[in-house]
Length: 219
Image 1 (tube, rainbow, N blue to C red):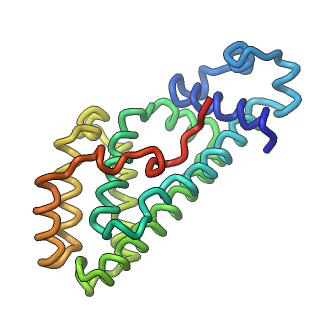
Image 2 (cartoon, rainbow, N blue to C red; image 1 turned 45 degrees about the vertical axis):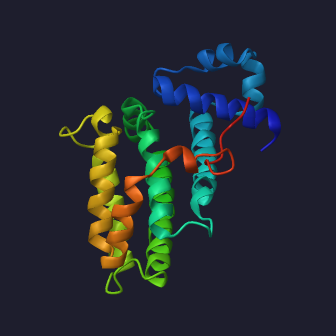
Image 3 (tube, rainbow, N blue to C red; image 1 turned 120 degrees about the horizontal axis):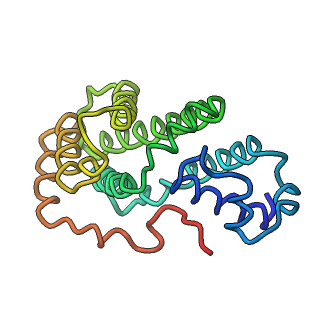
């Protein structure tokens, strides 16, 4: 992907996240980017092609995004705490209309993105469980594949529910309850003791330095 196209795609991604997909026209895209429609159509054939490229870009960012927490100086529980805090903060940016538009009007792209997210989450959860077991923090009788799929199911159910609002799901209290609930289910006594002690003085700013955050687009 050349630099001009990547700039266009990253900006369109922001527009879709803010306004949804259906309501954003090609005229809106050209006007927002300060380019002519002729220039826009040099890179994409139509809106369907544009959406497809945005999804491909989203998948590429997804593959890069969680490597920030996979650093040796943190144990498995700390890594999971970092990732969970990042995901929790990103919940505030979720626009449900974007998800609904993608699912209803672009089912193939929705399926492709969903598959990629599931594969990445499954890979990350399994890797974290194995690390926690090696460190003596997680139970050795766990089935990593089942735990990973349970996590995927739980995360996806947050979107399609009318029990919790996005505001509730992105709150500090919600994050804490879900995180403790999960760790207590997979940790052994040593892990639970570490969790209780670590949460007493946990400061998210300790972790969220520039080199620890997922890759971000820069203007």
